Image 1 (cartoon, rainbow, N blue to C red):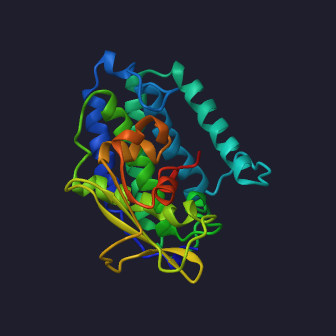
Image 2: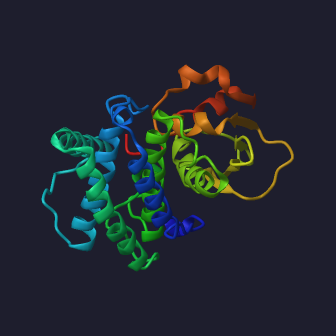
Image 3: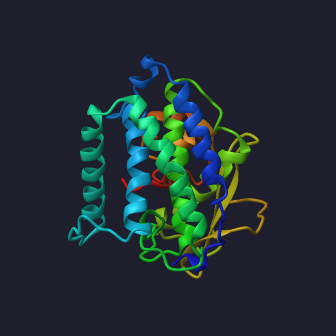
Length: 278
């Protein structure tokens, strides 16, 4: 559960991202709405529809306590399959809805979504667990952190499709990638190494940072203790990182663009990290 992780507080960034999204949607041309995104099955319009689904689903389930569907979930795969079907059904239905209507619905639901998350106790138990971080139960702050990554990721997919870099700043990108790194220990859960082994993962440039994964008491934990010589050091560019860890690109596609120093096999595992439900 997330008490074992240092908490992050990004709830104040949600309305900022929402305002940026509204401004972005107002600026899109008819051509922009039809452009392909790195989410291979979705155009810009499809991604906008998916973001709207997130607003409405959260308000319905969490704020209003309404569950329209109660699937039987027996495994991680069952959950992913269920979510993928929900997402696909919604996006397909929204193909009959105009861009103007999507914008109007975002203007209506976005502030309500942000107000809801501002109202919850961050240390209460969340209805939803952040499974990609290896949690069976999560606190609200961790769930909200995951929601921030969803809002950032999908808006960035839109911006990437139209060559807009406004989100790739320290203020917005660093919280996103920092939250993604909570998946590192879970990614290495089956990797056996000597206690004291340290993996350093760096997202380059001034908008990135470095994260240390330490093998301690036969477990992998994120650490903030500096080390002079990590066992493995991995360096990834920001523009690659958000696509790689959201499964929009795969390691073999960009391996020659990533630097791994030290134990290569140990470093390669980090490239398989997926910080979304996929």
